[in-house]
Image 1 (cartoon, rainbow, N blue to C red):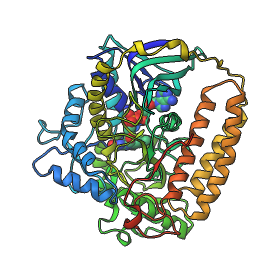
Image 2 (tube, rainbow, N blue to C red; image 1 turned 90 degrees about the vertical axis):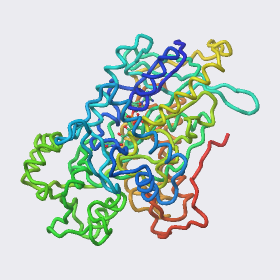
Image 3 (cartoon, rainbow, N blue to C red; image 1 turned 120 degrees about the vertical axis):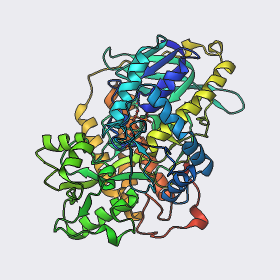
Image 4 (cartoon, helix red, strand yellow; image 1 turned 60 degrees about the horizontal axis):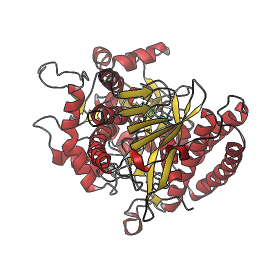
Length: 530
Ligand SMILES: Cc1cc2nc3c(=O)[nH]c(=O)nc-3n(C[C@H](O)[C@H](O)[C@H](O)COP(=O)(O)OP(=O)(O)OC[C@H]3O[C@@H](n4cnc5c(N)ncnc54)[C@H](O)[C@@H]3O)c2cc1C
């Protein structure tokens, strides 16, 4: 058993930026499920949206965010996001993130533009922004003697206890040590959930294998309120290939002038939105989905020729190299692209100070629903959300630290009896995982219907019963933990989707094709019934 002041679950941008500051106030333990850099953050290409120059304003960034969010954004949270944004970028820079400089004005950052943004405001590190953020923050963390990072530790469940007047308090988490094979208890005064998103719930996703929604499932099981899980963002342009994690072709490519075409060469985006290929990503994803379904084509083309070969190589070195490694020269050939599950706008409800409804459990990053994205996330607002709200959670954490002591916790209560084992039914786990992902892809994808959602609910319920039986009867292992979480998150997505009987933002149901502000201008909130 380990005791610490701050337990951080996850080592993406939210967890690391929190840990870097929290260590000034107490000891920090970070547990992370694979290698320390493995996270959605590590794969972010486009960059971080933040107002940077005189041609832009907070008002414009706020308006773009609200416009994209389909009426469901929390205005206060959006204001915090946008106004704290420049400071968040500055802090990342001070921690050593090497953002790309403007060629003509090297004292400034080079600013990109992406779909839905009315100004150039995307700060980036070439087209490998996330990797550079992880590199810099992990380097910086090495200098902090009172931060311990435990790699290959997968959190299983939060540890909670009654906190009086019907409240629950989080006092840490159980985790499996993948290498040593045992289960450990991490007892903390304050816990930050920074475990990221859940793209792996879908068959096609841009998210890496770690993104199984563990944090959302753990928090839900512990009694946290969860919201807006129906709003799953599908990135319009992932490279069309049969790979576990679809390689993403950043929206910045369209921002620089690339054009979407059907396989027969026709353009189509002008029929869907006045901004054409620069329309918000849900509209682009739906348009591609619709074009593919009507034509029967397996993908559409992203034609980069308007950008020019030299600029493609200079502006998108990583995308150029990754495609070339797969035999595709994007300076002379169009890119075959399809939509893929990319981002979850919903998650564990927090206020603007990072608090959940469970005492001493804070949350930041993609695992949360802060209200900034509403029914649809504006491109490059999520790295920003993670860094801004992790910082605000830090202030809450410091206040809590003064209030809560370890003395109130009897660690003996939290010894975990079960033994971790590698002796388990691997076929059951891998088969069920694939079936859930396929079910979600086919029935709970870009275009939904009542019939498809009901079908999905039936299948996920059946899978969940099997998984729960296996969970209770067999020794624990990381794959089973993930499978249980994937099933839980799938159930939450379907439940939220069924509750929202309208079409709005990322949730489109052909049985309710219109937006219904009278009934649904509010988040979809779900809570565990005991
Ligand atoms: C391909 C791609 C491109 C993107 N591009 C952009 C972009 O350009 N701009 C932008 O703003 N956003 C982008 N996003 C979204 C953005 O990267 C994420 O929303 C953001 O990085 C989330 O940060 P996070 O810290 O909340 O979570 P993550 O970075 O996902 O980190 C989560 C961490 O939690 C750990 N973890 C998970 N479960 C457990 C567990 N049970 N136990 C222990 N540890 C656990 C993981 O291992 C990981 O370390 C992109 C996402 C992808 C996938």
